[in-house]
Image 1 (spheres, rainbow over the protein chains, first blue to last red):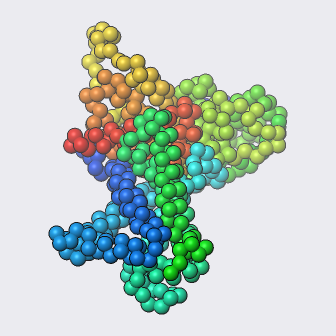
Image 2: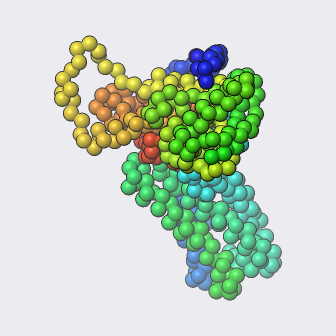
Length: 249
Length: 247
C-alpha cells in the first residue's frame, strides 16, 4: 500500500496477522447473534414472570386475607396432579435456567465488546443512544444483586426487621416497606428494572428479527417504554402505598 | 478561522501513538474538513515535519475511504462523510479532537489511517451472489417487485466506511453486515445463497473480533448514508432462519 501525502510518499508495510483468514465451516449457533437470541428469549421469560409477579403483589391492595390466600394458592397450584409447591418449583427451575443463560450470554458479549476496542477514544459522544441503553450491563449487575437480596428478604431468610419473625406474607410485606431503607433499596432496584426493560424489550424484539420496518421499530420502542413504566411502576405502587399508609396491617 | 487541533499521531502499526496539538490559522469556513487537514500538512511540510497521514479518495462522499472520529463523533457533527463536512460546522477558536476509528478489527496503520481489510473479508465470506457470466440473460426475465427493489437500493448505498463500527460502543459491524444482507436478500438473485451468506458473514465478523450488537443505535446515527436499524433486525431474522434450515 502506498499513500501520497502532501508530496511525500510513505510506504506502509502490510502487517502480517495469522488471524486475518477466512473462516471455514461456519456455524450459525456459534455466533454472537445466537448469543443475543439466547438473551432475548431468556429475557422474555423474565418479562412474563415479572408481569405475573407484579399482579400478585398488587393483591396487597385487596387486604391481608386475599393476599395471603393468593400466596398460599401458589403453593398448592396444580395439586393433586403436582406435589405440594410443585408448580412453584417448576417456575423456579425455568427462572434459574433463564438467569444462567442470560448472565452467561451477557458476560460473553461484554468481554467480546471490551476486546473489540482495547484502545479507547479520548473523546466519545453517545449520539443516537438513549441513556438506558448505556446502563444495560452495570444495571444488569445491579438487578442480579437485587435478586439475591430480594430472595433473602422474602423467600429464603424472611427476616423481619421491624415486626419480629413471621411466616405471614402480608405482614412481612408491610413490615418490610415500613422500614425506610428497605423501601429505598426496592425503589432503586425498580428504577434499574425500568431502565433495563426500556432498552431490553426493544432490543429483544430487534434481536428476534421482528422489527424489519420503520413502523415496527417505532412500535417496538414505544411498547418497550410502556412495558418498562407498567412493570417498574406497578411494582413500586405497593412499597409507596405502604410508606404513605394506604396499605396497612 | 483559527483552530486548535488535537490529533492522534502514530508512526506505524507496531508503535504506540499519542495525541499531538497543532494550531492552524487562515482556515476558511468553506473548506472541507480534509482541505483543512491539507492546509495543516502543507505547514508541517514547510517546517520539515512529518505530515499527518489520513485516508481519502473521491472527496465526493461516495467512496467510503475517508473516515475520522471528530470530537467523539464518526465523520463529525453532520450526517455525512468526513470529506463532505465543512469547516462552517465549527466555530472560530474551537478545539477539535481528531482520532482514527477505534476497533481492534481495524488496526491503525499510521496516524489516522486504519486497515479496514476485515470488511473485505466479511464480504468475501458471503457478501456476493453467484451468476454465470458471458451471455447476459434478458434483464426482464427476473421481475423484482418495486418495494423490494427500493429497499435493496436504499441499503445498497452503504459505502463500507466503517463509521458504524467506530461509533458502536461494542465495536460491532452489524449495521454494515445488515446492509449487505438486506441488499442481497431483497433481490431474487440473492435467494440461493441466503442462508449460507448470513452464516458465513456473521462467522467472519465474529472471527475478526468485532463486538456483538446491543441495538443501541449509535451506528445508524453515525451512518453517512443513513442506513436504518431495521437492517440489523433483518440480519437477525436471516440468521434465525438459517438456524432453522440447519446451518
